[in-house]
Structures are given as structure tokens and as C-alpha cells.
Length: 435
Image 1 (tube, rainbow, N blue to C red):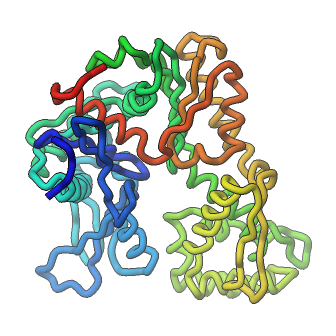
Image 2 (image 1 turned 180 degrees about the vertical axis):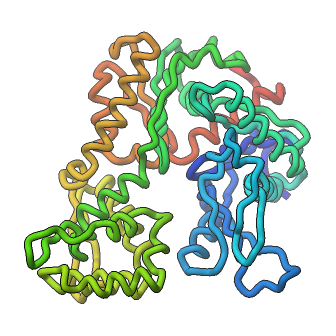
């Protein structure tokens, strides 16, 4: 049985994110985040359907979160589904997709399977059935198309009902993040919520304050919302291309002075394309390209990556290097798997240079959000950073530089939205104090 103090008996909050998801349980004295994988409070929004070795009558085995990603990387036969949230509001929501071995699954059922898994973990933590849920949603599932946007919310509600939630409520994700920040303010403020994760960089200008937090309906407090589909996975790709893959011949010159073909390097640095490089025909083609390289050691390292299926490991090293630089300013990248003693380096200046174009587009999105709100930069009181990629100092500094009067505040990089949804659930339940 759970030790949650007087938890609302049948209510939970779920941050069903594009890249990662989290669960919050409201309590009388706050919000409790559920451990979803071991001690982790967030998990990748991913489902892997394993079909390897199944008999004709057997259903695919599902793996979730990090286990789903691991199954895919190991090369188990099946289908990995990520970023399922992006199908909501599209025609794909009503269609089916092949998961291998002639088996098909409806896209909306993929969403439902993941929600069911989250609900089961929430119930295990709460020690009782949970039949009511607060779900986060973006301000716009689909930009500029209200009918499709409404259809996206309806589809998510349908999936939640299908897995056993009899009552489904929604709250805007930027409002949820702002609720988390709002707990510490004692006067009305305009806050720019910068939610920069793995797939998108989203900005919202939200009005918060003691008077506002007494209200359940906060739509009027969203003054503007904007974003771009550039974030952490793009950072990892560009760092790998700039600092790791040159050792394997990226942008190298051949004997005639021409640059070697680059497609294989872009595929190796793009998460969902890595496995395509391992196809036998592709491997044979790469092997024949040895004469394209003036330095045949680079070709040998490339073939080592392909032969040993190291693509995902390399992109993981790029991500780890990005995080290490964010925390300490400099790191060494161990490439001994390609060649004994081989390593690359990454420091803050090199990372900022590799990511300069991406950072520029993200900062421009923040500027556009300000313009959409009809505000001047000095009218923003605070910047609230959430999402894993906000830990990269050059990015946060560039955004903060556009708002010199605003106080920079950092929330939980991975769980601020879930915590805010949990706070909304407490108020919705009507049994906790609202002030």
C-alpha cells in the first residue's frame, strides 16, 4: 500500500510528452511524482513491439520507455514507435501500421498501450484504482487548424477512456509549467516559459500570480505561444557530425580533392535512420568506397562502425558529451571502439559553434513569441526554463540575453510540466487549498 498522505482516491496527472512522459499523484500537502523506470521519474515516450520468434497466433510483446529503445538498438525484430503524440490530429490516428511479421497495430492503440502502462504504474504507486486523469496538451496540437486541433484532443481523450479512465480533463502544458513556477510568486508577473526538450523548443508567455492561481480555467492567461521543431536530438546530431564523425571521414577529401559522399554520415547521426546503414546492400556499397578516401584509416573506422553496429552508441556519446559540457565545460570522447587510443574532444566553445544555427533559430522563436504577445522585452518579469536541453548554458544564456530585466528561474528539467499538472489536479479535486 502507498504511503501517500491522503492522496485523492482516484485521480492522477499524466504529462504525455513528445519525447518523455511523467506521472504525478496529487496529495493533500503537494504532488508526488511516480517512479516509472527504477528510480527514474520520467521515461521516453516509446513503445517497442517485439515480433521475433512469435508463433502465428501470438501477440507482439511490448516494451516501454528505455527498455523499448534498448530492444530496438539490440536489433530485435519488431517496430519501435516514438513521438506517438505527433500522430494526434492527423489522418494517421485512425490508420494501422505494420510492426513486423505481418502484424498490424492501429496508431491510436499504440498511444493507448503507452497510456495503459503509465496508468498501471500510477496505480501501483497509489495502491488503488485510478479512474480520473488530468492530461497535458500543447496550446496547439496542429497550428492554424482548429478542427484538427479539436480532433487531436478528442483522439487523446478517446485513448484515455479506452484504457479505463472514466473522467478525462486537460490542461495546457505551458500553464502546467507556469503553475509549478507560480507557487513561488507573491505578485502578478508575466513569465516566458521556455520548454526545450528532445524534439521541440516551445515558448509561452503566461500571466501568473496570487489572484490567477485561484482560477481553474487559465486559458486567458496564455498571452502567446510559439515554437520550432529544433531541440536536443538536433543538438546531438550536429555535435556528432562536428566532433565524432570526422574521424570516420565526414567532410574528408579523397585522392582527387573531392569531398567523400556525406549521406552515410547524416544517416548515422539521425537516430531513426541508423539501422538503415546496416542493411547488407548498404554495407557492400560502403566497402566499395575505400578508394574514395585519401586517408584509408577513416574508411576503416567507418566500416568498424557499420560492422559492429556502433551507430547508436556514437550518438549516445555525442549526447553524453553535450551533457558533460553543460555541466563542466570540457570533455573527452572515448573512441577506442573505432581504433585503440582514439578520442575526440568537446568544449563549450566548440559545442556553441556546432549548434550556432540551431540556437539562433530557437532564440528567434522566443523573439517571435514576444512579438505575438505585443510586449517589449522589459515587460517580461521572469524566464522559466524547463526541458532537458535548457541545461545547455550557451542556449540559456542566449535566450536570457534577449530579456535583460527578467529573472532566470530553472524548474525541474524533466518534470515541471508533470508537477504543474498535479497541482491542477489538486485544485480540480477541490479538496486542497487553492491559495
